[in-house]
Image 1 (cartoon, rainbow, N blue to C red):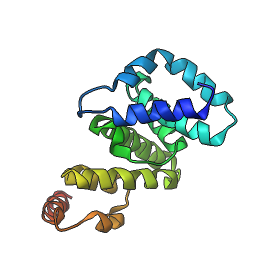
Image 2 (spheres, one colour; image 1 turned 90 degrees about the vertical axis):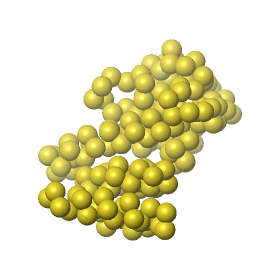
Image 3 (spheres, one colour; image 1 turned 60 degrees about the vertical axis):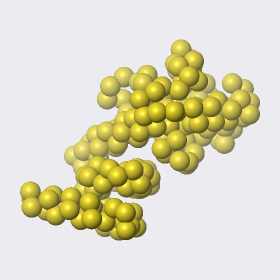
Image 4 (tube, rainbow, N blue to C red; image 1 turned 135 degrees about the horizontal axis):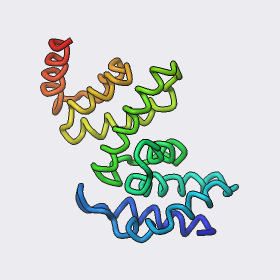
Length: 173
């Protein structure tokens, strides 16, 4: 994939072909065989805009291709361009959440800042709150020690469930 147009088309195909939360998009199945080649090509790219789009593709591919514990899906998502995090499906967001939680635990033990993760945490929280997964959203914010960022995501649709969950969490502490 030498030109920006091809990468953008591939990304559009991947992000728009997720028809259900469990299906793997067909373009993703095709690109699996090229995961290693795409990673190597990414490292040599000079065009920063093109590199961001390829990072998005690699993030989705890493969801099914990377070795456990490598957190490549998170790595490439942070290197990629911003966009609708839910466009690649619920399972992709779930995988990113797990990788973020692992990174938060590691950052806490190493006393590393997590500023680069907070933007992505916000995107995941917005996605979770939109699709009635308030407990998962709150849990991620608690783990990130960022519960003060919850209020913008609470609205008339989800405030009751959010408050009930916060109350139950507070009781268990």
